[in-house]
Image (cartoon, rainbow, N blue to C red; front, side, top):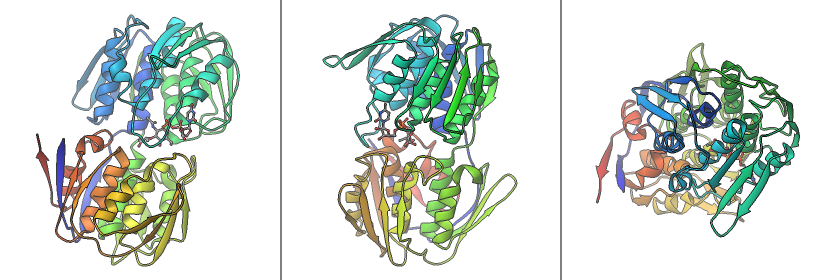
Length: 420
Ligand code: EPZ
C-alpha cells in the first residue's frame, strides 16, 4: 500500500484542468458493448476503476486500448459467459455490464459487484427493473452470482428509489431492442444525461435524461462514435473543499456550475467566493470558513453524497459548529475516526449524522478506507500542523488521477511513498 506524506499548506493558488468524470466514463465504457464498431473516448483520466472496467470488457472479448487520454473500445464479438468475476468483485461499476450484455446477447452471468464499502449497495433495483423488461433473473447466493436470460423486450419500469446505477443499467438494457421502454423515478445526475448523450451518439433514441421520466426507443443496431464525457464535478468539488479548508485562489478549468449547484450554494454559505465563468469556476477564500448549520446529502440536484466527506474535512477547521447528515449510504462516515486521530472535533450523532466543531488539527498517521473518505483525509491534512501520512492511497487512485500531484500544482507539498 502506498502513502501520501502531506505537509501543512498555507495557501492554494493557480489553475487546474478537470479531466473526464469517472462516474460518466465507467457506464459509457460498458455501453460500448452495445455496438460492434469501434468507439473512441477522449479526455479520460488514468484511474484504477477505469483500468478495471476496461479489463472486464477485455475478459468478454472486447478489444481495448488506453493511449494518453484516449480510450479505444471495439466489441466486434462478445462472450457473456467469460466475464472475469474477480474483477467484477473489485468495482461497483462492473454491474453496468449487465444491461449492455442482455441488450446485445440476450443472456449474461455476472458476479455481484464490489466497490467502496460505504454501505450494503444491493442491486435489487437493477434486477427488478430488468424483470419488468421481461428478463428472467436467477440469483445464486452461494456463489454471489446472478444469471439473466432473455432480450429486454421493453415496457415500463418504476424505480422505487432514483438509483444512478439502476437508471444507467436499464437505459443500456433498452437501447438496442425493438420496443419502447419508460423508466419512472429515474435518477437525474449529470452523468445520466451524459450516458444518454453518448447512447444517442451511437444512434440510440433516449429522451428525458436529467428528469425522473426517461423514454428509450430500441433502435435495433448501434454504430461507433468518438465522444468526450462531462468533466468530473466531484474532483472539482474536491479542489473547492481544499481551497475552503486552506485558503487561496484557484481557477478550475472545465468546471460546470450547473452540475454542482447545491455544493456551490453550500461553499458560498461558508463564506467562499465562487465565480462561475465561461470555461470554468474560480474559487477564493481568505481566512477561516464559517460553519454551516445543517447539510443533508440527497440524490441530484441535492448536495452530492460523494462530496460529503470533503465538506466535513473542510468544516473541521471552520469557525463554529456544523452538522452533516448522510442519507444515501449507511456506512459513509468511517473516515471520521481517522479525522479524530488528527485532533478533529467530529462526533457521530446516531448512524447517519456528524457534528463538527472547527478547531486546529495536527499531523498524524491515518488510513484511507474508501475513495472519497481517503480524499477527505488529504484535504484535512493540508490544514494540519506538521506532517500527516495518509496510508491506502490505492483507494484514492480509484477516483483521482494523482491527487497529490494535482494539489502540488496548486502549491501543496505532498510526497508519495511506495511502501512494501
Ligand atoms: C453511483 O453509485 C456512483 N458510482 C457513486 O459514486 C455515487 O455515490 C452514487 O451513484 C450516488 O450518487 C458510480 O457511478 C460508479 P445508487 P451507485 O445506485 O449507482 C441503494 C464515488 O465515490 N441501492 O444511486 O451504486 C444503494 O445501496 C461513488 O465515485 C439499492 O438499494 O449508487 C444506495 O444506498 C461512490 N438497490 C442508494 O441506493 C439498488 O439496486 C444509492 O445508490 C441500487 C442502489
